Image (cartoon, rainbow, N blue to C red; front, side, top):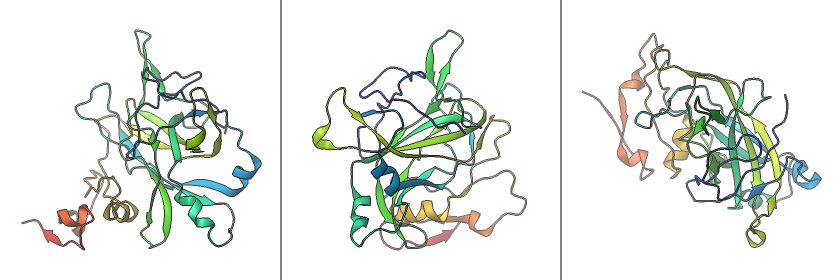
Length: 262
């Protein structure tokens, strides 16, 4: 698999340029703003200490076409976790709480050889194939196993066209005191997701119920949606499909209660 190598244009408001730059004008939930990304050549120090892994893999999506009225997101929402490659001395975990780590996402073909984020239309205008917020800031919380971690969530990604794709994620560590126009921030490390399928509206099997990880992060205040699911392929209805979550639980306030639909 060919490793992605590209630069991202800071404060760019134009369409995604597939050859040299990526539009990252859409900010993450905490409005972290990425600087220029250098070609993927992380230093020995950074590449040996940190790694990112796709903790929650994307599985399916419904092609959203070129309208904005019914834009379905990639399901489940991709979640990336930042970790150390090896066991670190006591106290090193605080580095994972650095608020200016950011992860940038792009769309690639199934074999990981071609960046598919850009889409050239019939009139030769270039637009984005991958919609939504492409940059995520860190969220530190505990997972479904009560283990603390640093997570980067992408809850509103969608794809305009059907097919099989992968998502590429790159980690950058912004040095706020040294940001300047035209400056470069090196990519620390990168990872690609598994292959997922974007279906046409007719073939889309439906949304899955949210995972335990999604629910755990939501309860702690992460800006991510929790869904009950409506998969068409379910042959046996599960009891939990008839359970609605209490608004207090969804917002992370109190323990929350569950009530059955009449």
